[in-house]
Length: 115
Image 1 (cartoon, one colour):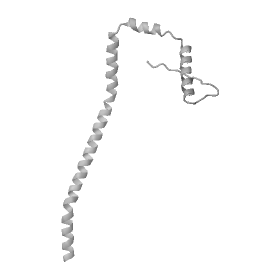
Image 2 (cartoon, rainbow, N blue to C red; image 1 turned 135 degrees about the vertical axis):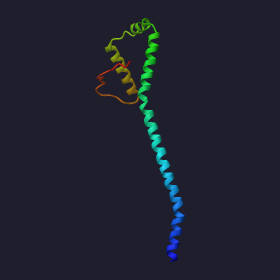
Image 3 (cartoon, one colour; image 1 turned 180 degrees about the vertical axis):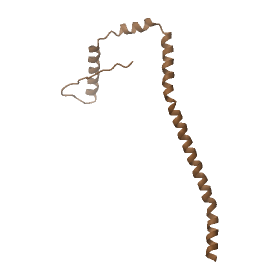
Image 4 (cartoon, one colour; image 1 turned 120 degrees about the horizontal axis):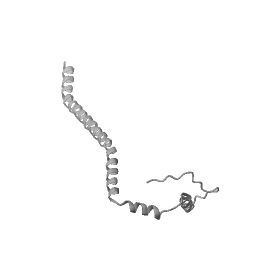
């Protein structure tokens, strides 16, 4: 009879800390999932940040006169072939400065203007 009594007292002494550990586990999981939902919500708002930035740029562009935009394009009256030649020369100098020499030369396949 003493073996059964000892086992029941052992279980009574372990039951309290196990219950506390279970509660801690559940609370921790709830906190993790709540933070994941919050992060997901913040990431979903990123698409609106770009739209706000574009609208503020449009407002600023509307304030500036159109004559200045034409003046800057007139100042930069560079032919596309000249622009490609300048970019190619800059890439060649950069690579030669780093020690990369091209036997057949550099070939620029395409240049895309980003505005």
